[in-house]
Image 1 (spheres, rainbow, N blue to C red):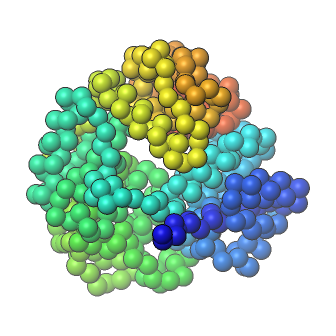
Image 2 (image 1 turned 120 degrees about the horizontal axis):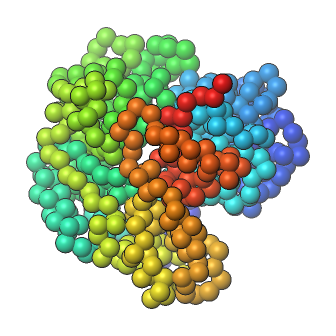
Length: 449
């Protein structure tokens, strides 16, 4: 019998000037199976470490000589892509906003619970390690559901897949646009070719063009070497641009040029290289309104919107809650969590719950319930935390269509940050929205004087 390949351990860099903090974090992370390297200062890390090898950098904020934000800028300037988490001793919306704008993937306020850090570690591991898949799973990504509206959507997706037309996926955050994009790609003639994805809202504006188009050595500060962009990586395959509405206008113009010329030119180079890429994009905002406000290019919109598919929110397909829940529970068990099943009462509650965070919120809710339950069957009481969300305005996760969040949204965000001591993971859960949506809304808060 052939040996089952064991995924390599997650490589984590801990950077803090307090030896006690470094020792505590190192012990916690090693218990989780991570390979940890500890550094007393960012400068030592940059000078002595093999920085490209790390999957995650965990850094303090207020460090001597070179602070956490400065280290973040240096790492991003070198075009490195590890997940970057900043720790701070004082909750600050403004600091959180700045860290997220600079490209941090998370922001922990000390003292934080160990489970918060372990959740980040597990998320990073899930995203950085290839999981064994069956041939069916490789060819047909899961798109689970049995409702009539969902089955009709999948049928339309299969019909458009062979055409290689540009597809625009519309839907609220968490409805599964990324899953549907992979589903479309898997039914087309390029199923065996690269599928490359980018969340356009996850990068600071200064890095978007380098990520998409690549750059030449020395083309900007920190560009130590030549690098291919995602268009080149997706050549002959599919490029999925999630949250396309967040793409800066200057990058929109260059994307349009690539689509028209079928060639891409790296930053700092004069010669363009031919590329053959199918574009699938996704949005949770009204792009037509954005075009009318001159926030999105109309010519690019029409190039992307050749075929439009709308994903229904989970509350409009309650028949799909049970098969989705069963799939997620089975998946959690495969990941090492205890095997659990739903009681009839708990299932009935989940079917009635509106899920403003859609399928993603359902998955997170099940994971939380499994983590804190000692019983084999999840009962109604295991989902009390969902009942507490019933008083929160559900429209928060639909994506703001105005320039600034409403006064109610601002108040809700600040109240959630206050109640959770500045913990964004808990605040997002309290509001019933995904962390990416919470971060997007957080960036729109006006700075306090």
